[in-house]
Length: 475
Image (cartoon, rainbow, N blue to C red):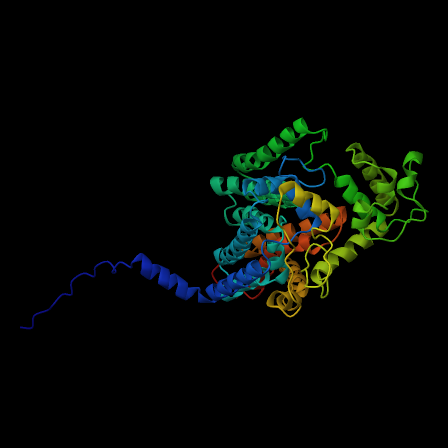
């Protein structure tokens, strides 16, 4: 009689050590690790070659207002708080190093965001690479400017809402990140309407979920405005007191002052023989009609120049629309600008740089802090200079991303896809922020770089929906 052997029951799979888990994770994501390593190496070269940091006009203003702590009129003072906390006047290198780390973190988070939406690892590399390898991104991180920290907070705020639209704690942190981004750059507030609509739609049957993120958004901003107004004569509920000046610059860039009717006392702000200049000139140049008319920076002038700007826009709406559309299109077409943007350039050996310590305002600040600062300059055949010339943001890919998002909205089966809905949030937030920034002031590559992760990720998500086979499981 044949004996039947019964196999013993299978036990649990052998435990995998943490080291083995990390190795398996690294192996499965090796393309991103290679990208991340290259991006880190590039930043290290820029940081070493351009120490302690690059300075634009705004950089000197931020630095100057750390001691004594000053609430800025034309910008939120959040970055001033950051510089004060880091002791920036003693160690610019620390600030720029942390900004490079923030840039790397932003690239990693946009990759993770795409993976969380079920996109393949190779597709998720695209938005990460567009941000991490973009020369504009790298150079801006070496400047004493807000963009690196702003981009990180903006992506955290929108990304957490996209991934966890109904989870209390992530949404509260999302609201806090958006508030902090707005205190770094006022443009952060342009993302709030899209964020609110997203949360309202996803929680329309349980609106109590919105209380925590709204409080996390409102309380820091209210606290900032309250303390600032108690310390200054700004007397406004807005984050900045100079938004009227920026809108004035926008309006004057296209205004035909010979055809504009203004109150008699404001007519000198729009003379018939005004020069043809870019918006920034009308805001800052001493020869600007408003700067010539007003010889000080009294906060009340903000309301007056805003009135002029709104009158011009009301009387020339078509010219306003054309100017905004023309500038906005630069973000999405080849040669869209940036190479001649004064806030994102390199200083070259043997050539003058406008915001070096020879600039009177900079010289005063250097003396004030007893700094030993010299603008770092590179030769035109150095690695940073070559990278700066040949690795700039391919604007056309951002335009393709926007087009893919619009195509995904054409069919109900596409726009109902969960990934398409996240693409709409990311794309609308990024493009909407750019639109409002351009409509209220001007176009600059500094406005584009922080929204690259949002727009590029939106394009990748929309593309994945368009090629998704019917019946394929959705994440």
